[in-house]
Image (cartoon, rainbow, N blue to C red):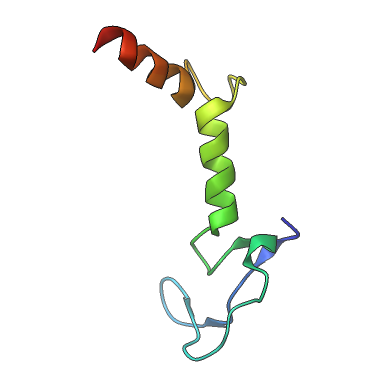
Length: 78
């Protein structure tokens, strides 16, 4: 991720959640941005979250088990 403090689209100011301006193309390289609009992460961010949840060994990421470990338990008990 190269851009973490701006969204990928041009935002329209409004109360609540700002939306992307209609008819304006979003950034060309969405993989470089952390946020697509004011509130939604990009696919790249979601992919990183999923990869860490699936296979991380860090207690700060997954506790008490990662998804890979939980999936392996299912075959033992079901």
